[in-house]
Every structure is written in C-alpha cells, then in structure tokens.
Image 1 (cartoon, rainbow, N blue to C red):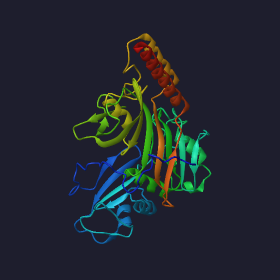
Image 2: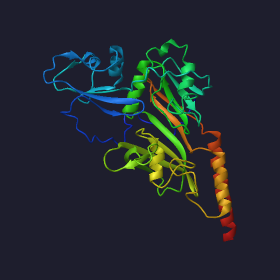
Image 3: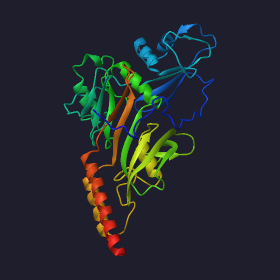
Image 4: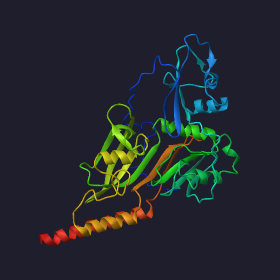
Amino acid sequence: MQFDRTNTRFNFDNLRECFEPNPNDMRGLPDKLIDKDDLYEKHLFIADPKQGPLRLDKFITDRMFKASRNKVQNAIRAGLVLVNELEQKPNYKVRPGDKIQLTLPRPYDEACSVVPDQIPLDIVYEDNDLLIVNKPPGMVVHPGVGNYRRTLVNALAFYFQDLPVMEGNPENRPGLIHRIDKDTSGLLVIGKTEYAMFHLGAQFQKHTIHRRYQAIAWGEMEEDEGTIKNYLARDPRFRKRMAVVTDGTGKWACTHWKVLERLYYVSHLELRLETGRTHQIRVQLSNMGHPLFNDVKYGGDRVVKGTIFSKYKSFVENCFKLLPRHALHAKELGFIHPTTGKEMFFDSELPERMTACLDRWRTYVADRKAKLSLGDS
C-alpha cells in the first residue's frame, strides 16, 4: 500500500501536544482499582513498608486474581506496568513503598461465550502479530446487551478459530484492543497474540497511537483549526450518552481539528485524537454547537444550521436518507509494530455514502454561489 504522507506524517517520539492532568496523587493510598473502561482497568499497588525483596512479576501475580505469571510478564515487557512512574523489567526487585500501577484488559465472564459468525471482514493488512480491519458502519464492535450476534468480535471469533496464535486470548474478546462506535466506520487494529495485544494496548494507554478521523459537522467553525480540551463523563440524565463536565469527575479528553472544506451550513473536518474516550468526537463537537451530521444521539439528526425554506429542509432530509448514520470515519491509523519495532501507517477511503453526501453539499454550495453571482449582475 502506498500513501501520500504530505501533511499526515507524524513523529512517534513527540506525539503528545497536550497532556492528561493527574488530579489525584496516589501516594499513601491502599491497593485499589483506580480506573476502568470497557476494555481496560488500572490497578494500584503500594508495597508494604516491611516488603522484602521480591521480583516485580511475582509481586503482581500474587495479588491479581487469575493473572498468570506469563501474562503479567507480557504486560511488564509491553510497558503496561509502571513502578514509581517508570517502566521496569520483570526481575525488578520491589522495595518498600514502591507505587506500582498495572493496566490489563478487563476480566471476561467465563460463562459468556461468543458464537462465531461467518461474516466477511474487510482486511486491510495482516501478519503473524496483528490484523487491520476496515469496519463498516452499522456493525457493533463487541457483544453487549441486545447485541450478542453479528458483531465484529463474532466475526473475529470465526476468522481466528483455526489460528494457534490466538492462545491466551480471551474467547469472548479475541484480539480486541480498542473500539469505535457502531455507526462509525473505519480502521481498527486487532492483536493476534497476547504480547501484541499488550504492546498495542500500552500505546493506546500512553496516547502514542496516531488516529485521524474525517467528519461532516453542522455549521462553520470560526477558525480554520483548533484543539478541544475538556473532561467527559456519563450524562447523569441520559446514561447512554456522554457529557462535558466541569466538576473534575470526568476523564480528560483532547482532540485536534482542522477544516478541510466549508460547505455553507456544514463543514468537512479532519480530527486527530490525543485521547480515546467514549463518544469523544461526537460529544465534544456537539458541546461546541457543531454536532455531527445526522448524529441522533447528540442532536445532529435535524436542521441545526441553514434556512427555513421547505426546499432546503427537503434537501437535508434527502441527505439524511443518503447517509443514515452519523458522518464519522476513522480514516488513518498509525503505531509501532509490537515485534519489529517499525512504524506502521494505514489509510482508508471515505465510505461511498459519506462521499456522496459531501458531493451533494458541494453541488448545493455551487448552486448557491451561482445564484448569488447572477443576483449581483
């Protein structure tokens, strides 16, 4: 695959342009679960003042339910374990008062088994360690309430069923490292070995994964580019939505955006994620007054900007029918390969319906400009 990297090249040594604040100083706290999301959970251990010399991998294995020593060693080597904010080797000797933070995939329910579904996958790239999939809109990433079949995980379970490299991978979450929303299309990386999962997971946790999206949002942005920084948490009134919060209870979220096209009442945007929170782009743009085009959950499924004329409303409704989901596509994905250490970069084309919707807006803008030109003459 050949990609034009003009204006898309990224520096893996200096990706973080904004940093996640650390509102809590963990010193002096007892061992506890300090954070979790759908895929990962973070644990904090503080060594006892009388702690004798003990290997780091043994120290953690003794304290983690159902975590094998091999799994813990893979996590340490992948950078998912920090001792006093620094990475260490598995044979590091834990000392009294050491603060040890561990990030691991969330335990899965052994009673919950995934039924393999023979669903075609759009595979962009594959090797012995990982798989890059271009997820279509409308496909849920992993099973949940009301979605136990026909998900990406069901498809992966069928695809991986004869691959011995899947040993150690949870049966109900084969290879899953990150996720995108059901109606968001685009690129996902899947780990085929436990070490690959941990190594890639560490890159996501450290925010060094390169992710660029393209979107259609309501309204014209005041500037040509900018950065959105705020805290996100569950909306207390609508638990299936996220919201921007100011009370310090949410998770830090940072998105860089740039206008690609101004199309009168909508904008074609490029967005680069620093963090990867649930619904991050959707809720941040909605909070700015620029919800994604046809985003039902965040208020973009109605005429947000434009005229009151019925002809315009009809035009918008036809665009909604053409693109019956929110206009967001995970277009670019870049990371360090867990085995080779090489930079990997992938780019995917916008889905046909999203491109067609943009073309209709371009035609609308051209017609408006032509009419204004005739009126001036």
